[in-house]
Length: 424
Image 1 (spheres, rainbow, N blue to C red):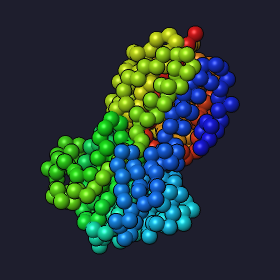
Image 2 (cartoon, rainbow, N blue to C red; image 1 turned 180 degrees about the horizontal axis):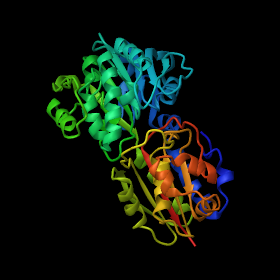
Image 3 (spheres, one colour; image 1 turned 90 degrees about the vertical axis):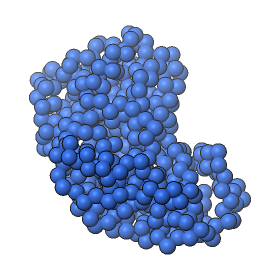
Image 4 (cartoon, helix red, strand yellow; image 1 turned 30 degrees about the vertical axis):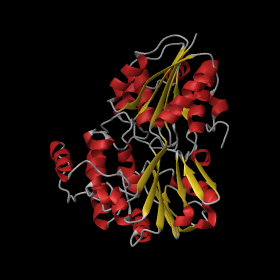
């Protein structure tokens, strides 16, 4: 684990306030480091595997299988192999990049839209878990991005790509999209648990979903789904999303009696670590929310209305945005930072940072630093924030002002993180 995951920390930390804000961000990244999370929360002593407060006697199982999907699955699989080693009989994971596992086959898929590669890897996962019996233990690594990466069958692949495009234009929340996605898939919405039955199933959840809606992480393959075809159909109809072939998710209790889900990390983990760092810096931490789904301007209002001297406002979530121009570059976090400039919310004593915790804000950067220096540089370059906003092209704005935050893929994903530091 790096001391601070921000690669261009020194270049960005040109003032004390910037340095402090970036150190707070670094504390958030460190707290959600996937390898460290697994090392700290999963222990093996003799045959007893302990996860948080529960224990499993591995001598009672003839086979251990590991499957996984999402942006954290590669790092999670590598860390789990260090604990279980050759006890793992077989496994398969799909993330954004291949990793060098010894016992688990690794695939690199596409995100945010599924592809044929995702289907092939997901079929491998399906083949591993099907025909399991009561003597099997299946460990499932579930993380954000899994809704697109875990994609089976072929019918889901075709409909999933269409669903993503339709939702991008609608501006609706990801939870609504996941409700529909669960009803397109054989594996989501508890489908994986059903196919694994009657094996014992351990779900290790790396949550990217704001709030406590953990059954929505990767569209809930190991959770019993409370939504129905009717719920999905209503969302489709109300938002004019098009025609989809929906299937019902498993509702029988028996499929979930031997399922044990453990939430190992969420955005609260990051926000609490950032708050601790704020206090170490001698400032007051104000956590306003960890489940911000509001539209961009509403999010900014909530954050900046809590601003006061010698304090740091902290928040996390997934602000909603209706993308009207797909040719622009940049994601939610860069757009939020640019909106703060356009609305003239930044004063001379404040630094605002919004970050993608996976390090990839629909681009190769995590976010941007926004302060008076950013604004002054933009003015010197005659950059019009409103123009870039209207084109949904925030990346080149911050590239030209030299304020992009570069982490590379973090191997973690717990939603977006927001920091507003104010200090004279």
